[in-house]
Structures are given as structure tokens and as C-alpha cells.
Image 1: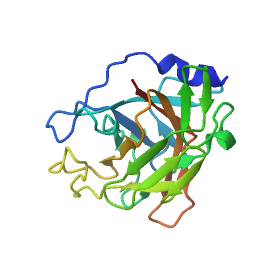
Image 2: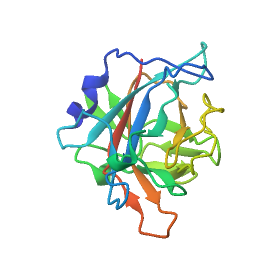
Image 3: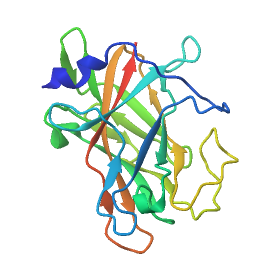
Image 4: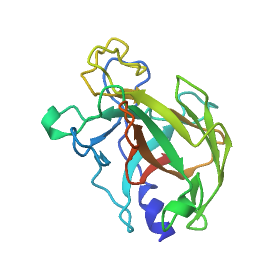
Length: 226
């Protein structure tokens, strides 16, 4: 089971990079409420599943210059921009968090907060250190089986009121529609070891009207570092 989660991702796949560029060359993680007027869960756009039915989102770790720490290809998080009737956005003022999970407790095959696929043994190890920079707050550090710095959840953004400017690094002049979000987290691998790294996370939204939090199912975010 553990082999099946990551082994298939240790192959080249097309991931473009955007750091302050005008074109949206990076990948976006698209998500939103299942029902805009009466939300009960957060849904995520992804057609890939693990054997135990957990959605997979792919990324890649790259170094811009020799000797640099490998960092993610700047994955963006964006609410799906469809009609309000489609229910695939959040509500204005809702706080949306990304919560990182201990995969040993929340999946059949995971082993920790950082799940490293060791190609030499064909097994997962709770090894490696990944720093998550929300760019608007304190960094969190996931270190193998634990959170060694910060907290296990970071505020991604607040649902726009229709006039808020995007705080995404590559879209500072973008005005978001009501209920939309567009922001990035920066993931950096603190020790440059080749292999595939998996983080299990879920979205959690705190409604502005004081209602109960709304969450997504767990999702695998897998980065390939070659």
C-alpha cells in the first residue's frame, strides 16, 4: 500500500514555474464549497486517487540556482471561479486554513507529517524537513513525524468581498470576485535529498457568520525532487 502512493510519481511530469511572472505558469489547487448557500464540505478538483480513495495533487521541487534549497513550483490555491449557483466558492469573510495532518493517523499508508519515498528500499519513511511560508504570517516546519516549529495549520486567505486585491505573489493587481481566494504557500525542502515527498492536508473554513467550521476530506500533496 505504501509503495503505491508515491512510487508512480517518481517520473518526470510537466510542471512550469512562475516566480513573479505575468503568466500563470504554475499549477493551481482549485477548491470551493459543495453548496454556496448551505455548505457542508469543501470539494477539491482532482481526478487522481490513491488505493484508499484519497485525492492526489502533484507538484515538483526545483532549485532556481545551483546550491539553492529546492522549493515547490509555487503552487497556488484558488477558489473555483464559476457561477454562484454552482456553489464552488467560499463566502465573503470566511477564513480558509490549510491544515497539515499526521498521515499515520489519517490514511492507510502514510507514516508522518513528511512522508518520504525511499527509492532504494521502496518504502515510506517519516523523514525530511519541509518549511511552509504563508508569506503573511509565521512559518511552519514539518519535520518527519512532527511539527517542529509553528503550528499544523496556516491561514491561506479570507474570502473576498468583491473588492479585495489579490495577495498572491504574481497577481498583486488582481481584484477578486465575491467569495474568491487566490493565494500561495511556499514549500521549501530544507535538506536536498532526491525522492518523492508527500504531505497530507485538508482545507478548513471558519465561516464569518459564526457557524461551524467546514472541512474537506484529506488530500495528498506530493512533490517530486530529482
